[in-house]
Image (cartoon, rainbow, N blue to C red):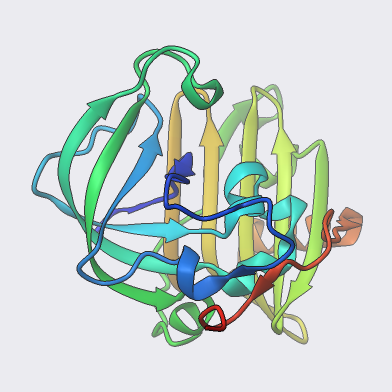
Length: 234
């Protein structure tokens, strides 16, 4: 089942997003609910198909986990059925004409990090993308220009930018000299790939990620905590 990271989730939920405290229970899509998410034009979803989706709280949904790393621990993995596609008018949410929002029926919802930790070993679950350079074919993480890292709930989060408008993310377990990847995201103007799976890094992949960890700058939340877990008080 393919996993997607939508561009944005719908915010027309009757919630005051400017309030000093928001409640995770109110924000999170629930099983049986229908919700809306915005997708890039290159995502070709099929009506009736079931897919996996990464749901993020508001700040990281808008700006990415790199701007609010603590929200990785509040993110969830949804399973949803595609109900219908709705064209988006030009400039809506700052998006270009041709971007689509999809109505989705939520079938399951699980906290992301416990789900990732419970994954069984899968050496061939995914591979870091390769790129052709003047020095030959290299792991995409060998070409990074900027890199940041944060520790979140015992895992290491890495984000990086590379040439040709490439952006990448990883969630890792570190155990001494061993690195195990649990989540990998690769985005460029022509594609977007989001992979889940417990994969022990080795060879060129291990070397590239060790180098990224060595040069990464610390990432911190750009805004104060604003989400309370559980429902809003009566």
